[in-house]
Structures are given as C-alpha cells and as structure tokens.
Image (cartoon, rainbow, N blue to C red; front, side):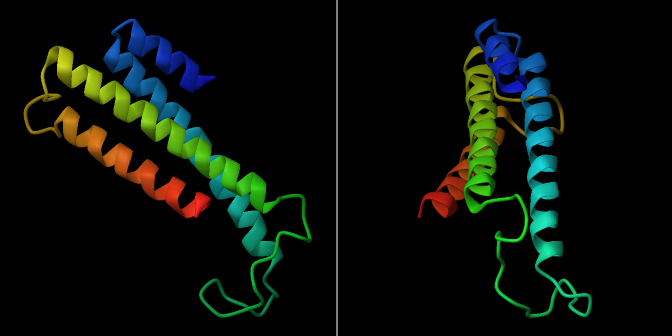
Amino acid sequence: VYNNIGVIQLYLRHHANGREVFQKAFDIQWKLLEKMLKQVISSNMSPREAPHTQGSPMSFEHHNVTQEQVNKMRLDLADALCNMGSLCMDWANREGNTFGEGEENRAKEAEVAFLHAFQIRKEVLS
C-alpha cells in the first residue's frame, strides 16, 4: 500500500512526501524479509552452531517459509528501490538536483537505488 501511495505522491509532484512514503515501504519490507531470514537461519542451526560456523545447507523444508517467498520479498524490495529512484529522478528534473546544502544529490540517490534494485533482481533471477 505504501508503494501505491508513493506513486500517487510522485504523480502529484509531492516529491518530499513520496520519498518518505517509499522509505516507509522499503523499511517495512526490509523488516519482513529480515524476520523471514532469521526464521530460516535459526531453524537450520543446531544449538551448538554459531551464526558464522559451517552447518548443514540452508533448508526451507522444516518451517513455513519457502525460497519462493523469500525471492518474492526480495523482488518487492527491488520494486520499492526502483520507485524511490524514479521519484528522485523526476524530482531532480523538475526542481534541481540537490536536496540541500551538504546533502546527497537527487540523481545520485536515484542511481544508488537503481543499482541496488538491479543487484537484487540479478541475484534472484539468475
């Protein structure tokens, strides 16, 4: 829902509001993915295994999380990043490239968002 609200803000040219909404969408999706991955990791470790030791291969079999669900969540994150990138590019084209003194520029923020989205999609879809 936050991504949809952010898109509306983009079309209404309410860039600052849209940026906040897209960030909320990303934060929520990130927390959900993190929770899902923690569940997978904890269910695949014996009590003696530490997070950085070698154990059995990661398996999604013993709980309700599937690899497809994790991949979908990662692709949703990539979508949120693309939305943020699009908003920043539109904002830069319409109102100038800087957010303010000492802050990142809008085009650079768009580039970073698009590159992260590309990396996620490449990993999931390869």
